[in-house]
Image (tube, rainbow, N blue to C red; front, side):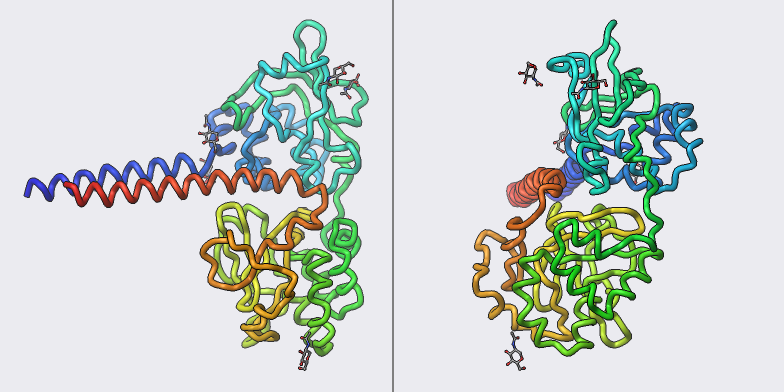
Length: 407
Ligand SMILES: *[C@@H]1O[C@H](CO)[C@@H](O)[C@H](O)[C@H]1NC(C)=O
Ligand SMILES: *[C@@H]1O[C@H](CO)[C@@H](O)[C@H](O)[C@H]1NC(C)=O
Ligand SMILES: *[C@@H]1O[C@H](CO)[C@@H](O)[C@H](O)[C@H]1NC(C)=O
Ligand SMILES: *[C@@H]1O[C@H](CO)[C@@H](O)[C@H](O)[C@H]1NC(C)=O
Ligand SMILES: *[C@@H]1O[C@H](CO)[C@@H](O)[C@H](O)[C@H]1NC(C)=O
């Protein structure tokens, strides 16, 4: 009796411990929750959620948010920007570095340019997307977009600082930038081929350009479209197989790389499961499975596995990612074919626990453009973090097991 009681007690205690540890490590911060206790920032908070920026902020490990109070937000909203443009403007207010109020007042040489999340959208040209922070007379700190006509926004107060994860600083007025405020293309006017060609998916864009699959992609943009674009080297490795397909099969395999809904990276990371594609038609499933391993997102067909290695463009409702491999649907390829595929790619011994012979990230980093580096860095950091959490959980479960044996 007594022994059973103690075992029960210790199990409950440890389970609670596990749950609380897991919940405190899995999400470093939640900007929506932090801002919720500041009514004067409620409009800003609302628009971070509406533009999906909140999820992007939560995903980052080291970040500074320049918050606007409700009256500053209403002056921004008076411009009647589209949601896409507003997202660009607000993403200029999210710095991908940590600035507490102390560091803010002690900038080396009194002025600096800091990279913002607007840079990561792929929309910012040149140095647009940088924020100028300058220490001014009398302890004031001025802020402006890099292409500024003077520093018109000033530090007001520190809202919350969690060194060195997230700092929220209130500034007096919105940062304005011609580049961020440029009207974003209405979805259906987005030139898929141009964007993909420019952002490092030229080979795939070339296949699409001359294909009957293109109109299907183009028609899907308005309602939401996610494109998975294989890297140039992945396309060239796949060409011998592609040339072997009939015309109709070529169209199918290209359509297989599009999904008729908008899926942000955050959504992909939090959703495992089967996903239909533009090629799906009745019994011809043409689906694949989204599988995430920490911050790593993998797409598994029955034939091969690709990893997402970067974001080309993210303009809700259209998003395009770069992937490490050409996706091969089981409807067109033999399941065993992968083994004889691309002999140059040695399987990575270190990749753990995957049932297939695929070597997901083997050719991934080779030709990723520089613009991916921020996302990659954050992803790497997050991956390292979640690995720790997994290891730690393992240790706790093991302790639980031992505790039950002993008691
Ligand atoms: C900062 O983030 C890291 C990683 O998510 C976490 O381990 C740490 O506890 C956080 N620090 C604070 C003060 O919340
Ligand atoms: C963040 O907090 C808000 C408000 O408390 C909540 O609705 C939301 O689900 C939280 N997000 C995450 C990722 O935990
Ligand atoms: C500060 O200014 C000095 C002299 O102009 C320059 O050499 C140095 O690189 C600057 N430091 C930073 C962090 O910009
Ligand atoms: C920031 O802007 C101010 C005012 O336009 C300018 O004098 C300063 O040189 C800029 N700082 C940097 C690092 O570009
Ligand atoms: C092309 O098809 C032929 C006939 O089905 C087959 O023997 C050959 O291996 C295929 N080539 C490639 C690269 O898949």
